Length: 121
Image (tube, rainbow, N blue to C red; front, side, top):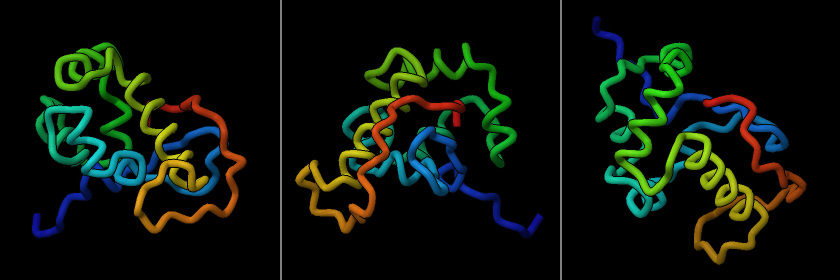
């Protein structure tokens, strides 16, 4: 009971071509979430949903059609796949150093061109 639950932002996302471990917080920084959703962070976005998300497994067990409906109602995207693809594109471009962002991103290997998500999260 005294143990803190992990935040949604710490959940891992498996994205083809990105390599390494990428979290929802990596893909969805607060400024991006604020401009594309009605939430201020990915943690808040998940917390405000009707779904109990306490770990990776519980997030992945959300029925796709219900999560898509939530995304459609609370973002500018029609479904999770569209939202995830847009976030992956931003992430890849930022890592490649082509967004003009002032973040301290590493542009080590801009070979991650895949926008496809192999898993919902």
